[in-house]
Length: 116
Length: 113
Image (tube, rainbow over all chains, first blue to last red):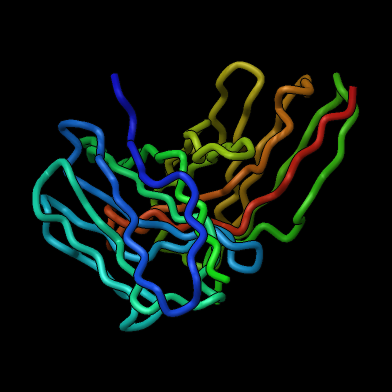
C-alpha cells in the first residue's frame, strides 16, 4: 500500500516567493494533517481536515499560510510570501480514526523547505 | 505553552542496556498517549500507544509506562540496539478532541555499539 506522498521533497526558494507543498493521503483515510518540524518547537500541528473540511487551523502561524483540500486524495499548503523563518520540514499525515477513539496517524516523508 | 514535554533533548545508551525516554504532560484530559519514532530524512512512524485506563503496555522490546497521578509516561527499550538510534516523539490525544494529536519536542536517542 502506498503511504502518504508529499512533494516536493526539497525546496529552496528566495524570500518573498510563493511556496506550494503537496500531499496525497493514504486512500480511505478521512483525516489529513499538516505539521511543521523545527528545532525549537518540535512537531507543531498547523491545520487538519476531516472529510476534506478544515476543522482546526489555529496552528497556522499567520495569514501568509493557507491550506486547501479540494478532494479526498489531495491537499496543498501554501506560503505566500515566504520568509526565512518559514524554513523547516513540513509533514503531511493522514489517519482513519478507530472506534476506540485512538487516532494513529501516518506521516509522509516530509518536504524540506529552505527560504533564503 | 507546551502541553506535552520531553525535557531531555538527547540521550546516549550503550548497546544492550536499557533506554528510558521520559515525557510529561500538563493536561489531565488526555485520553491516549503514543510514541513515534523518526529516522533522519523520514517521517515519524507509530511505535506504541497506551490508553489512560492502563498503566503499562508492552510490545516486544518496547514498554510504555503511564503514571497518571504524576502526569508522566516513559518508554523503555530493552535491550537497546544501534538501529533504535532515532528521534522519539511522545504524543497525546485529548478526550475533548480525538482528532487532535499533540506532539512533544522529541528526544534524540543514540545507541552506541
